[in-house]
Image: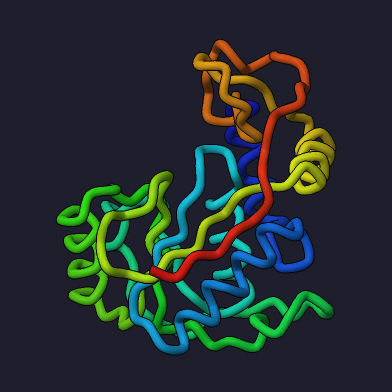
Length: 204
């Protein structure tokens, strides 16, 4: 097993509400709140902002299903799932999202996103959370994940504890996950600081 796969597996194993930084916890609460009244929510944020990790933690806490990509939807059906019960992490922990599928790496086009929603419903899921880098240009509610400086520092420390340091990508963009995805240019780069902004939640 490669180093980055090992790190990724350990991160997924440890994902839970108690391990989210403030911006991720706020975004998770926003997603859970919107799912009370909407069937589709778009969680978006730049690469490396922690959307995937947030999705793992949300699924673990609420019983939602999680697909790493739209192609993996065919492997899942709604079912009761074990839920973690961490304390002191906000009211969204009480949400029952067993009919929800969280789909990572979704297309950012209007038609592409609607196709993912249609596929999810065809497999029995009533509600869908679409994870994308850019906001989907459609009339669906959206939650934007943007890390503050304190959030970035906390995640850097957590990743370092797992033996991985965040880095710059080829374009000079600060990415918390950097070489985890196997980018040879960032695999052994040192920990660096980045420019990040506060969390915002927008309802469109």
